[in-house]
Length: 271
Length: 267
Image (cartoon, rainbow over all chains, first blue to last red; front, side, top):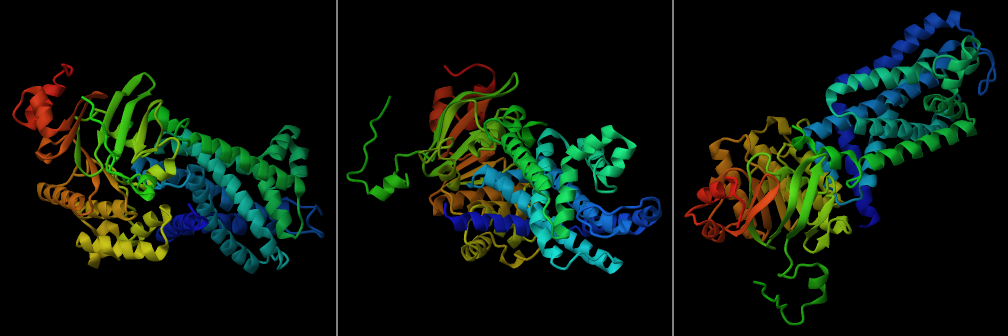
């Protein structure tokens, strides 16, 4: 197997995810409308309530709108990660997962390629959103748009790997609503996406601890700092560490010898 | 009982390397067992599929056919036993083994919202095919199944029989030597069924393929086929149709199958 083989495989998985995304127009709008609603309604309402003092990486007082944008970027990635997870479960039930897994390339590579494809789709959404946020008046330094790209890849992979891992626990599509309630909402609200950590500590030291160790908080901070041309080393290590952990566990869960399939059987056998 | 396998004199190195020597079975299943919890899906199953020709895997629903296919395609691995594809052990050399397999699954697995060609390109990519090769191969296979003019139509617009033919074309795209089909005619009308079967038989002859066709429909087997009979996870018989009939003392395959699956074990 040459390097070209790996590249053709990755390329075709990304093309397929891209085509599928474009065909699901509702998904495209939902993915864009969600953060815009937060920016245009929630942020405006909260502007007066939540004063944000000068905290790194910001060098001046900022409006709440500006504070919340990186959090909403991470939210796009979180939803995409979970959406991918959902499509893994769907593909598994429908059998099209088998098409992917009979590829002669190593399974870990197929899973990583699938993750990268999901990340590519999420990054496209993020840049459209950042464009609209710019029109709204949230203008990070121009170079920040470039600097944030590696951060987006890393945080997207981390959240995607989490989704992939979760997909191995979900037996059926119907159970997926539970994942949304028990994963997406707590992760999003117990994080620095909507309010700075020091604000949370004023309210509840316990929640502060949870939020500080929440991988989603670290993803938000990684994105926030990169967007303003700074590197948050702690967040970087956290996100990379969580990525290694989630991905490793997901590869094990999908491993032919040890994974859940060997115990439960494939889609047609579970009937 | 055992015939010594005599290799043709001085076989070329490449022939051995590619394991295309005529004596190597397309598929060798050896003492294969698998269970899900307490439920035993396959129980010490052994059989071989010759390097070319049509082999019918016969079994009622729940016989273990799909589990067997899942193991052969490495969706998951067995707890015990070995599977070799043209001599390549699926556990130790999964890449070499999987490269040689083309599969049509029981469930339809085409993306309905993508075009026929997009589906084929996706598959070619997964097998690491160069895009230009893949394009040429896709056109070639589409011409063979008579769907060249539908290449840019969405799969959703095709009939059930046409979709199956596209799946067969897709399975052959990367030029496998072993084609696996898991109940490929389920849900098709009588006409499409006959068409698909005739098509695969023709492919088998033209391309000198080994075909393993799983079904519970006895009338799909022909006299010259090899058969493998599975019942409740156990192998009940394997060999030529004639041999299996002779073994059970019956005149035709349906009667032989009924005798084999009635409950009594093979002597």
